[in-house]
Length: 363
Image (cartoon, rainbow, N blue to C red):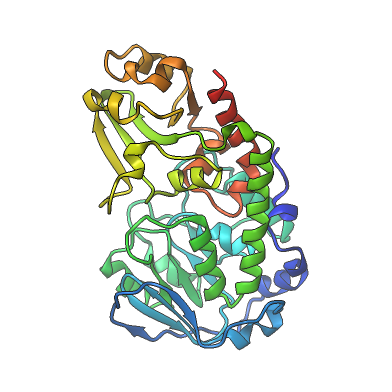
């Protein structure tokens, strides 16, 4: 088992008071929203900023809070108690602040337990004295009725693919925070900052981020040999080796490699204003594009790597030839955590992840 999330990512000073707050059945702090048209800037602002050291009891002084996003701006008038989460991973930010969401989107990949949660989420729940989270079965579209039935005071979706129609429906249920500019683009720090501001817990959010950054630094310090090495996160389809999908710096997977003191191949560094979070590179061009990659990260197992190494085109990429490849099986915690790094998944897996990168570079 990985490190306990209760001691690494959760803010220790908040645990007892938050447990009472998140278990409360009747909240007098219902949030209301004032929606406006989109503006050029995408930022989070508060009319009253909580000073360092603010406790949860004082957090109401931070309101009203206005958060801008792709569909405009949302004003939360008072501190929410019941928090719903749509999309990926934001439940981890809520849990790290000591609150149990009243509902969250179903997790659709990686190893989950009988409660539909990752191990680090269950650890956080256990630390808060809870056992499970209400799951919205929204794999075929948002279950608006289920969201409404959970009676949220605020709906957080900073890492999601909400459409305008989805947003317009959700905002009728509760104040809704969508992604800042582009669907499915949200790094772990932004996700934490948006969540903390929406809940009036900015100082606590900063503490969580600092704790996670310390865990990252400790993991990297244990393997200084990886610093500055050029790493690229890819997705290769076993049934079609005619191309390789390369995640760019718009994607949290590649962004997190930067957190680990790794560099990017020149191809990724030189991309300007990518329109997507990945680039599809033909197998014919992959040798040149990835010629300076010291290590390649991808999904699969040893049999899959052997298949790629035997390919007449992809098998010529230097890192693949030498076996400098980090392979992540689909049923492992590292697979899930590397796909969506969060304030809970990072401390739970970063030591293993960095170790895997170091081992691959040593081949």
